[in-house]
Image (cartoon, rainbow, N blue to C red; front, side, top):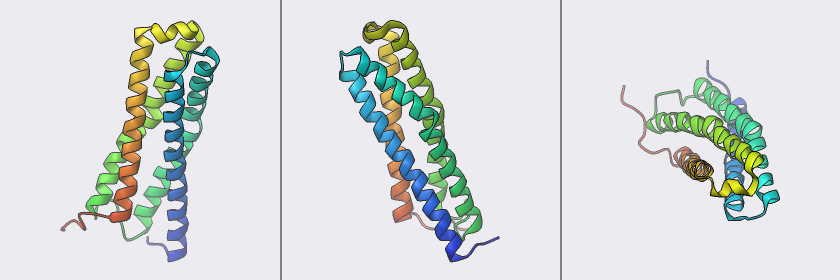
Length: 165
């Protein structure tokens, strides 16, 4: 079932809005993580991890779900399809990684960091487990940004063309 131009534009607009929210939220995560890593103020540390945890439970989840659903609708109801083009397949693979990092990894790492900060305060900065968690979180955030920007680039340039039948 294919859709008309108006519905395609609606799905595309929703897809871009959700993807923009996801990318923006991830950049906010990076800023909050940098603030947490650079501070020696317990309130800033606590506020950073509390904010990251709230974002991971709200904005990241909602935007990821919205982006996936609108992407599925775009693929199913337009000429693009699910596997007709190599760039779409690449976006689908990157989406799986983005879901794993964004909805699972970042949530777990921010929750672990928040729990450690709640229990140990500034002392958590010297805790090797906290430092490892913080490094994993920043690596996850950077990978998420790379994956999301790559998906934007793929959507704009549409490289590799159509698959041969």
